[in-house]
Every structure is written in structure tokens, then in C-alpha cells.
Length: 432
Image 1 (tube, rainbow, N blue to C red):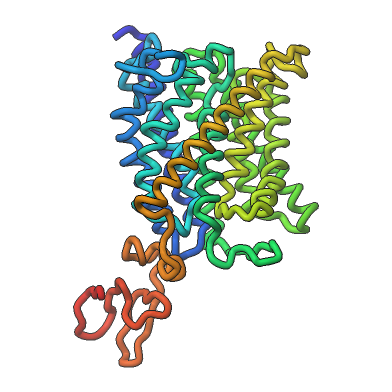
Image 2 (image 1 turned 180 degrees about the horizontal axis):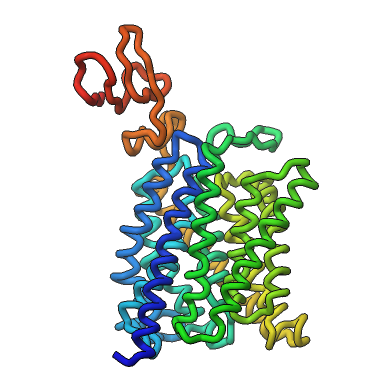
């Protein structure tokens, strides 16, 4: 193996590991932002992304995305990896991107989606919907031919995923008692903000692999600027969200601080290799402000998005894609006066959002008819952890009148679905 290929292989495998480790961040973030009774369920959905989603992409999706171009629409046949990089390393890296697209959807449908319907959603997302749009941008498809710039996926992953999240959350409907008849919103307290923060920190860390790893070249001169731009945009996004919430709500909202930083990361992903650092700061600032406004906008539509996926990924992705057309060092409207790139970026992001909305609407309506999309009212009330997985995230001590003690009993039921006796002569577990 030539030395350049060997070095690139090590670089891409390591950055692929960082990207895949981001799934741990998604899991902690979502578990911390949903209610206690649904924390296991969101974690299980991330496992679905890593298993069903990964295999769907490996078996089918990667060929649609990176096979030989057919009519500028899809790829076919063997994967065409870049020069000086083994195909296996390239496929491993791209696996992380496909899984991330599915994980964006997970948070928006939290606390009320059927587990079986989510499995099918992930298979179709990673095996078909995301790969086709990825081919348009990165595989030699029609957007690539037009000159669209999306270095690591603000449009192809985040705007697409945000659009899919919006469509599916709308079809599912809001959680029970989320909205009042007058349009006001009832706040559901997150289960664990420090846990959500830990998830955000892991995502931030993994994003260096997401963006810098997309060079697919360990010797690229762009590595350091990409990494710096990634960090600066995240910092600016978090700062903007903190300042806006302090001015608007008179408190520094921790969930908005988390989502502001993530929105900065989403927005810089398209242009991290092509903008100056001052532009990365500006991109992050706008993204952090947009996420506060965008969360309110989604609420006003009465679309229930428990983790803010639409505002973070959808709006952050759209802004980041357009920002390349404005601030690209070589072709940006504000930096060079050229408008062509901005028009291409606008066309591209509109096409990807439309693709995400349309395919997800068709998928969701089909799933509603065949499997059903939403859990029952009783399952939603008890929590999906017990209803769908038979175990709680946090064990709570339940005392019975005869002196026995058990770990967790779901509300309003005579007998727990799953419990472990701490005293007495009963069997170690019991299921009705």
C-alpha cells in the first residue's frame, strides 16, 4: 500500500469512529431532553439507527449514493471511492453520515411513535431516501453538476433530516396535552439537562471528525482551518442562543444553549472548507439566533418536536447552505459580488427539502395504513420505556402494603409490567 494511501486510511478510519461516536451524543442528548418515562425508548431508537440503518445503507444505500452515475439521479453498481483511499474506509466513513440523517428524525418523533414504524422509517431513510439525495450532491448527480457546494452535509444531511423530521412530527401529531385550544404550549420538563449537555459535548467533539474527516485526505491543507471554523461556529451559536434567551426570557435557557451550539455546528458544515474564520463566526451567530426563533415557529405551527430537531437541523442546515453562497471566499455574493453560487445553493437546498418532505409524507401515510404510526393513549401515558421495552430508565422504589419492595411500578396499574423484588419470597421478576 502506498504511503499516502496508508496515511489516508488511518485518518479516515479514525474520523469515521468519531462520526459513529456521535450516536452516543444523540442518545444522551435525546434521553436528557425527553421525559423520564421515555428515555430508554430514544436510546433504543439510536440502536436501530446503528443496526438496521447501517445495514440498509451498506447493502443498498451506499451503491445508490456512490455507484456509477445513472441519469444524474442515482448511482448503480460498485462503490466508487476516491483515489488513495480503500473502498472499505470510504464506506465506513459514509455509514456514519447515513446514520446521522436517521438520528435527526429520532428526536422529533420522540415519546409517541411506534417502534416498528420507526424501524421501517430508518431502513427507508438509510437505504433509499438519503442515499439518492446524497448522490445528487456528492456522487456526481445533477446538483453536483450545477456546482453546488456542501462540504460535509448542511443540506444533504441536516436540511434533509430536518425536513423529514418536520413531516413525520406533523403526521404523528403532538404529544397528549402538549398544546391547548388557544394555541398555548404546555412545557414538558426534560428528564436530565446535565445528561443532555453531555450528549451535546459528545456531538461537538465528534463533529471534528464529521467536518475535518470529510477531506478524506490526511495531508489536506484545509484540515486546520476546517477544525477551527467548526469550533468557532459552534461557540458563536451557543453564545448567541444564551444572549437571546437572556434578553427574551430573562434567563439563560440551557436547552437553547445546547441547541444554539448544535445549530452553529450544523450551519458551518456546508462551508467549513470554503469560508474565512470571521465568516464562520457570523454563520454560527445567525444559527444560534435562528434556533430560538425557529423553536417558537414550530410551536406556533403546533408541530411537537421534543428536542428541537427541526430548528437545529432543518433551519440551521438551510441557513448554512445559503451562507456558502453569501460568504464563500471565492464565489460568495458578499465576498466577491457573484450571485451564481447563491442561486445554485438556494436551488439545491429547496430540492433537498422538497425531497425530504415529499418522500417522508408518502412513507408516513403508508406506515399509518399498514403498521400504524402512533402508540396507544395508554402506552403514551405510561411511557414507552415500559410499554415497548419492559424496563425503566431510572429505577424508582415502590413500597407495597405488606412490606415488600419492588423497583418501579408504572402508574395506574395494579401489577407492574416489570419489577424486581427487593424483599419477600416472590420470584425475581413478574410480568402480567
